[in-house]
Image: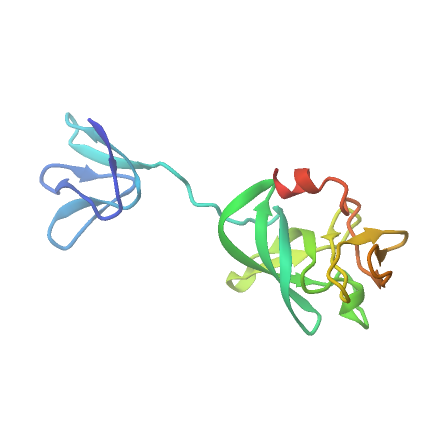
Length: 186
């Protein structure tokens, strides 16, 4: 008999079933579900297991992520991640972005509001560490500091606002505004 169970739902007593993957025993001697999933009971062997319906999305070293910088502290950018390996994320993750080299002014590398394509380089200390080193990675969409319009790519990292004419510099990706839909997961 297969049915859908929720975390904490009673499956049976420990005298009835041996709890396998996706189950746990509570202090009252009951086998309960660990996950939202499908309950599979083997009545001959008296075994119960729960198969997760949806695995949690985890960020791993080597993943390519797209996110928007929401804060800068010193040279570090704090990024709200929105896409992992071309697929939209269903929950919120925050990453820490490091400049690809020593810089005098971080505003010439990235700015608050910029969308970036980055690579996850570490998960040390329970933080997601991001890098934009290399031609593929960097800012993929930037906005004018003066009027907020989208900046148009010129040459050598120079971006120009088509509305007010403001010129800015960023560490831009080779994908800057080219494949926005593909990178962003649409």
